[in-house]
Image (cartoon, rainbow, N blue to C red; front, side, top):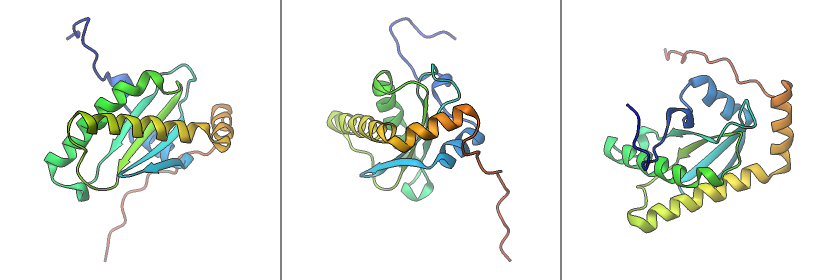
Length: 152
């Protein structure tokens, strides 16, 4: 079903969903942290592709209510700052601890954190070299995904 003209959503094309895309972002190993958030960045396969977001909120953060609250807050903040982020990049946000900031001021804080973290990672000189290496096909390849080892 199509969305109304005035409503802006979080389209499927703006999300990182496949495990191979997550592995590629983590393999590049470019990150920045602030407070409860760690942002990993990786150049996307195409320069013109808008920024995409992947989320990782583990069970140790809290119960399902807390984890889903974090995810809603992060998706909305990313939707607000996405036009200001550099195109052609994939971002994965990992939540380290705590409850999400509450209220309108909390929403602004999360937006500012995401914007600042993305700007820090993308502005680094080593990120630019990683971006060109990945786009030329000579960069870091994601590790093969292996099944978890069984404990004995």
